[in-house]
Length: 220
Image (tube, rainbow, N blue to C red):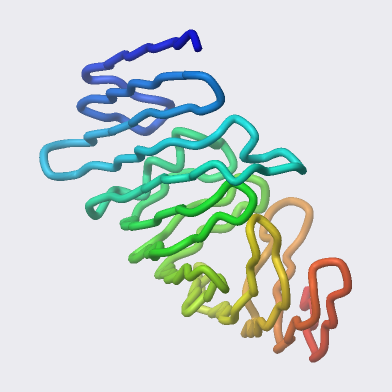
């Protein structure tokens, strides 16, 4: 089968507010698969890398038995890289570290690893609110996605907490089990008004038929 290969490198580049020392990528399309590697070095010792191979029919409804092997990992990276992909968040600070793998077959890939965020703060352009002291830890296994911790505070120090798990099978989400709690947590603070969340709710069931219980009020 014919193959197509490409590679490129950018030195001292940036996207919006995110700057990097180097960005290098290469890839090959051969027959029914795609393989490649992407690495971003923000500065010496601060990097993010993705590499692996996937079949062309990975995201089709008739996924094959062909192998999937993808890894995504990083050092402790500045969370400001988010601003390179969206204008919804501004003045983003904090750190991101991840070690994620996807292996197995295209019709039933197996996820593993974790995603960790610490010391996050950012402005939400649409609401006029700055959030701070954000932290997140997600653990991935072949059977579930576990949100072990999501903590965020508004500019007054009022918290939002979310924990829970979602069963997984291939790229489908199964049974849910989440709890959200908020204490006068600001979600709007601009010319349109002031709105805060207060209360506790649980979400169980499935994505197509969720069951939501508890008491979550909006304060103005």
